[in-house]
Image 1: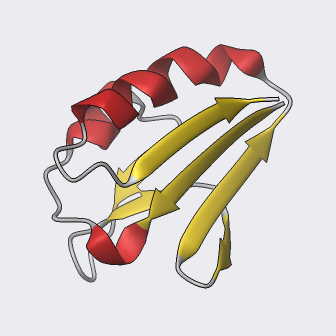
Image 2: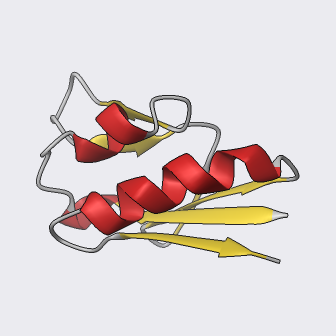
Amino acid sequence: MVVVTLQREKCIGCNYCVELAPEQFQMSKKDGKSVLLKAINKKGFHTLKSPDHSIAENAEAAAKACPVNIISVREI
């Protein structure tokens, strides 16, 4: 299981996550912030749980590229 978490409120809209992991992220046209696709929002933490381990590599690249460090990726 891969768990990807995004603290959306802290997003500055740099677009790196979308460039590196377009299957998981896209930019909102409303506010210009990143959206974690298919995620559940709980108290500002948008979390995606996926059994597909192939998403981990791109999601980790997005997390490393994020200048405000608001993306985390865990494999459990």
